[in-house]
Length: 286
Image 1 (tube, rainbow, N blue to C red):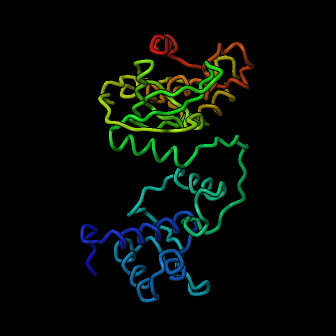
Image 2: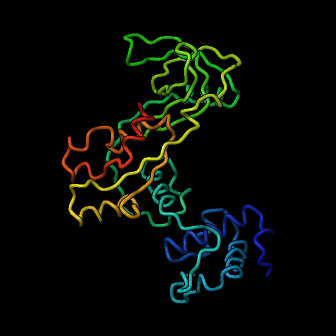
Image 3: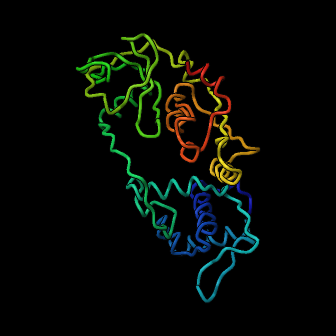
């Protein structure tokens, strides 16, 4: 069998990645898994399994009693880098109804729950118009409800990106009323009534294109044991973790991490982390 990955078609390589995903996370895979996931025939599923063995003979062995292939003791990923974030994102997407159960590569979903997040109502037609304006480099006239005014106002904006602050979705756009780049919550765009060619260039949005590095460490008032636990939580090395964020999203990142207030305002066990380069960050943040 030819074991040159460069010769593989996209569909074949995707099925081989699926085999490896199931072996790593579930410990087993069989023909019916491939047939159910991709709608292939029995013969095609058998061919894919044999092809995978050709690439990675030590990664799976056939268990006659269970009638399935199981992960081999010498398993070494060949087609994907095992990623906990990818697994957990699939789990959350299925649980939240974003991804259909049959579209997930996870065979046996573990019990899952999450703290509730308030629903942010984004009108699909609004999102379509914003995305269309981004793709076409256009400006759109939106009826926007801000916190600063009692009534919504019509204004022209030229969106160039979509942003997420951890809770809400934004359009990053040049505002022709305020003559600057700023964020507009998609849920507060009440109506759109026109579009035109935009002369604004996203290249001029310096806050969007520049990054700030947050250096965080365990709260100094935590015990040594507590500090070690927090270091594990945040993947810290030598008591420090570096988190890169676009300058345009810095305000939201600081707020979400609880770094937007004086660390002494909360108990160390509640605050958990502190900003180690606060002077440099606050200079940028203003």
